[in-house]
Length: 155
Image (tube, rainbow, N blue to C red; front, side):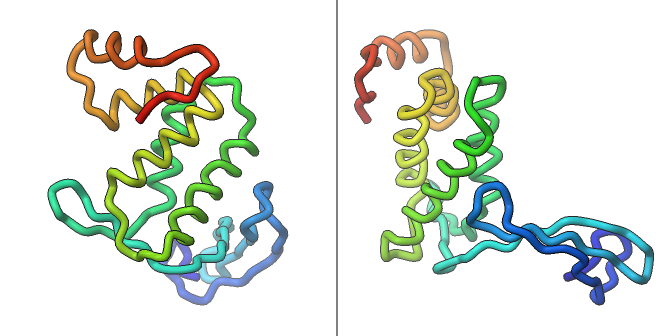
């Protein structure tokens, strides 16, 4: 593993343990060249996924990008970090087990919206506002009016 501080490729693992989500391994590393210490995470990856954007462009699936967008939607919401990690891992497992390596971004967005709708309505609306590209307050009004208390939102 390359050292993020000096670029040395000969780093040493000092400690390994399961991460909090229990689907990855947390490794503490040390660089003998510069003395830097850093942490890496190792996860099982069933297949290499490619995201097909709406404009047809293709890019490698990035779990970190998915996680950032979900965490932004859930910012300052009363959801336990472990539950968020489990949700993200579940989404990734679902994508990997679909049998396809090329997945349209629209399909990923719908899966994320389903997962968010189950755990937090505010995060669901926040994510939808970006995903569906709301342009005005009327877009929010229309979307929220379609939500029924206690019911799963329609797609």
